[in-house]
Length: 340
Image 1 (spheres, rainbow, N blue to C red):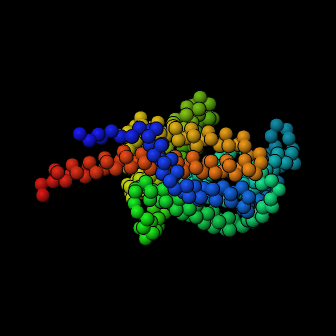
Image 2 (cartoon, rainbow, N blue to C red):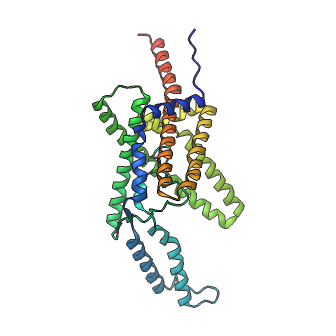
Image 3 (cartoon, rainbow, N blue to C red):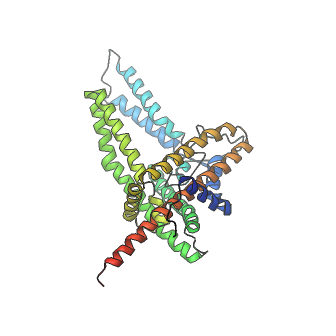
């Protein structure tokens, strides 16, 4: 009698790292990404931020509504306070390296050590050119291009892993056809997530903010419910990219498959979700201890890329072993019940 036992979480993780051990070149893309973020050029919107701060300060100095004196302060003091507040809010944006947007977030994006360590490792005296953006149109175009490029790089990386997880032979044409299709699907999923954030997340945040005027307890309760809902969605959408790259599913199909997989394998899915997030969030803390010299940073980048790639492969193995048999079983059942 053939056993139908599914591999446990430990076996799944082991299978993922076995795939990476046989194809260590899989870590090349996250390694190159981190090297670029570490010693590559920086893209800064500092001139645009400075101009925005100056404009806001001038607008504040000329607006009687904004300059309404508070607590006995004169208009000059009020203008200075407003200007300082604008600097505190906007100035940190000038220090952001926009190139870091290439690592647009796990579990759907590309893993990056530089984006997750507490403080970015120093370049140890290496000169890093800074590309300054002073136009809003250029900034918008750059961000859109970077997002599309980030998703494309992620698709190249994920498709390479999925190609091995599916046990398909090396077929360049098939790889490229899957890559283009799945890149568009990931772009669609990204746009869908942004739309949901705008139409659901922003109104909810506004409700939480307004509720704070009525009761701090109510605001805290709503914030807690919102946080729980986000975690719930993250869990049930955890396997979307696996469904796209391994299962060749459409955007809506991948979302449905991820929900079905978690619902029918809740505890094992939750266990894998927790373990992967603990590792991915915890290991950068350990790597941060050795990033005090160039050799330490290089070792940390290699180690982080290896671990993150092994976990990405393990997630795909989990999907392959748990959802694909379920899908084949449903197709078989449908065929057997057909009157034709």
